[in-house]
Image: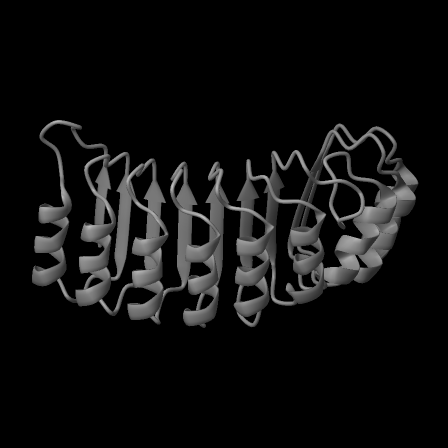
Length: 242
């Protein structure tokens, strides 16, 4: 395992250092790079070339990493099970497509604040890696209802779903920024294996919607409600009885 959290922009870790790690540590399974501005595709490609056992990759605030580096990982690291990408402005749809196509063991995906990531990348990733993908976090992206519909259709193995700050999503997808009874019931039907659900400040959700959701989501283990003022005691009892 290697975790680099923060690096000087003038004399910090570079592609050369990452290449040395790649050549010297072929058994590397976990790599985390946070705020490493001098590392780019060249370094990540060397990791991909030498570290075929890589299972988890976490990239945050790496402005020079692009689709090229992610495609190299996809092509050379078939054991990848978890991928997290945050605030990487040059990583977009092509990289995610490659991951979805070439990493059949992917179980967890987290993407946050990446402006080039859109419906095409997210939907390709989910539809390709749907067999074992269980954890999905999508935050601050420009995706639309299309991506959500893909989750609802293909996400049969999803047990942990987090959607936050998706400004282009409406009730046409099965999740909305202001969740309603209709969309909540659709989530239950589309993600039957969902185990954890948290609803905060959902003023349009009533007990009826919650009960309909519970009837479909039979695998639910944890339900958290905060400031859902239309949910009454009878709604809670209805959930428990299902």
